[in-house]
Length: 458
Image 1: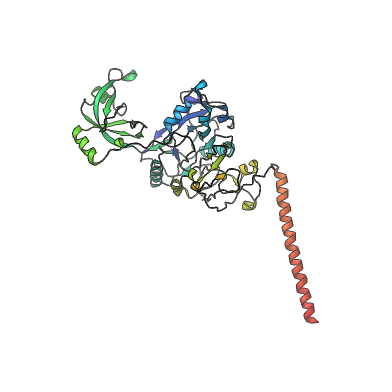
Image 2: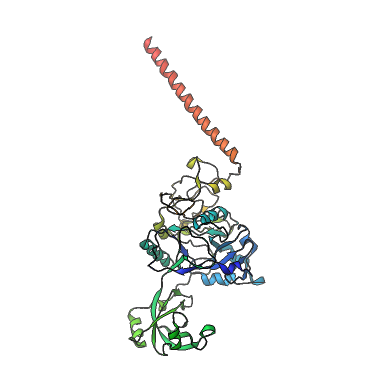
């Protein structure tokens, strides 16, 4: 049992009276919330997750907040894996899961500082690491927010999370963290009433309702106390809203909106013949085979080679549509003084410095081309910084986009040198030799010119 895991930061719901301009956007994940204590994972209820040792081996030994995730639309598959205990745990199921980290609860700094710390301390390039830092982008306004929401929803995601710039981590529900989701509203037939429990003892607990396709479900939220005392009658029609359908075609998170006294159930059935409701649309269930990861908005989540287990990045790992709204990308590391000419690839150097991007052609996974994390072939990462006022942030750039660190950098798999001083000395030697060659060339040119002048005089 972990008390800290029961006190994580929780989100409130965004409304349009809150201007999102300047807030940080990230994708709302449909995984399982998991609090890392530095040694184990725990649920929001404080219960231990029995994950294999390899899944947590490379994580830092301080608390992290995030979600265990296996792809958009695969929440039910994910929960079925992580809820197993003891000898029922199947280690191989975890090999293609990812712990997506979005905060460091005990860091103490502002949000931007915490994100910079996560980038530097979660070893995302390590093949042994099964964690990745969630990508973020600064919101340009309501239109930008709604465009990103539409993009992620169309791709099968849940929605968008907004983080207030400069905010601290709070161990409660806070208005500094807002969730933005798309809901559908439809009509349903009231079939029966379920009695309430606890605070709702003696009044309505939930309505059992029916969809035009005959499927039944319960609506237990959205009622005020007067509606619970005098609930909609059996046989009446209600309007409810929901976020999405489960794999069984049942509305998830249904909320009561109103009684439709102007409609009969026959009216609803007739209307469904001409305009098919979302709830009656057959859901396309994602493959339960965990053969690869799927990327999330503003992030690249690498796949893993099935045979070797090594991380690889294919063209399918980056969400192209989502990237359209994130053309301005920056890195929080310092710029290496040697830029694109730097040949160093040891982990400590790449962790501390960024390098000028190289423009490379994207690979196409359909042609079986991919970029291994230790290969020389990588895709470019556009970088553009804008000088804007930031709330004591570690960078003055417009975006803190957490992406695969290999993007925009050529790697050399033969680099084993971790000594900064030796590398700097070698860089200096190279520059000195180049300078000497230039001087010698100038001297040779000067001698040739003098010889020609003497020839003319004679």
